[in-house]
Amino acid sequence: MPISLKKGSKISLAKAEPRLERVHVGLGWDVRPGGGAAFDVDASVFLLGDGRKVRRDEDMVFYNNMRSSCGAVIHKGDNRTGAGGGDDEVLVVDLKRLPEPITALAICISIHDADARRQSFGQIDNAFIRLVDVQTNIEVARFELGRQAPSDTALLFGELGRGADGWTFHAAGEGMGGDLASLAELFGVEVA
Picture 1 (cartoon, rainbow, N blue to C red):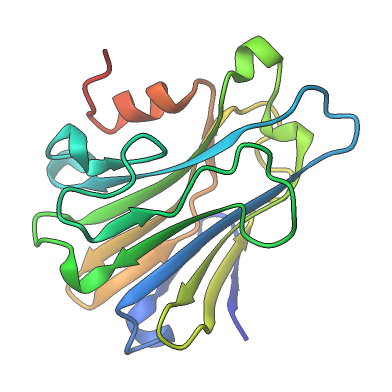
Picture 2 (picture 1 turned 135 degrees about the horizontal axis):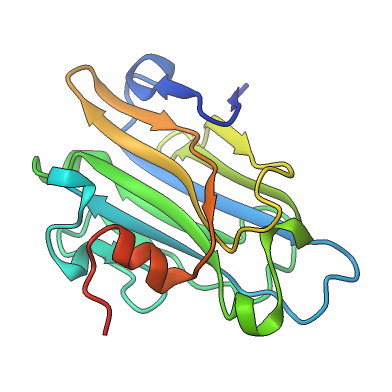
């Protein structure tokens, strides 16, 4: 049975699943009926080092850069509708391959063209992030957003962090206005 997390809570992955090496990060959501124009929610991950910033722009993994420069993080594809059950977008993280300067992975979602379409996470139900052990296919942890970001259009959903005792997962749920470019700037990516 996976550990169900609340906003702000943190777990030790080393304790929850000691042999965890490769993580399937599944992100999902449903558009509330009557939500208007089609929603395109995008998953992204930022490989962070000193000062909670990327070391280089290639440390941002998203639909236009689907593999980190170290090869440890892979984006499995952009779902432009969120249709269907289960995970809408998937990231695969090989914790053993992440270079030492990487201390955290910020896992984010943002609504494409949210301002133009007048969309926010308040029009989305059942948003979740879950961590699954790739080797065993066991779901280790899950965080369901609920109605915690009603007017936000970008979100730090969760964070994998490296500490002295191994990797942790923090259920952040920290929303903000803006878009993917806003998230990129927040984490130190040069946005043209």
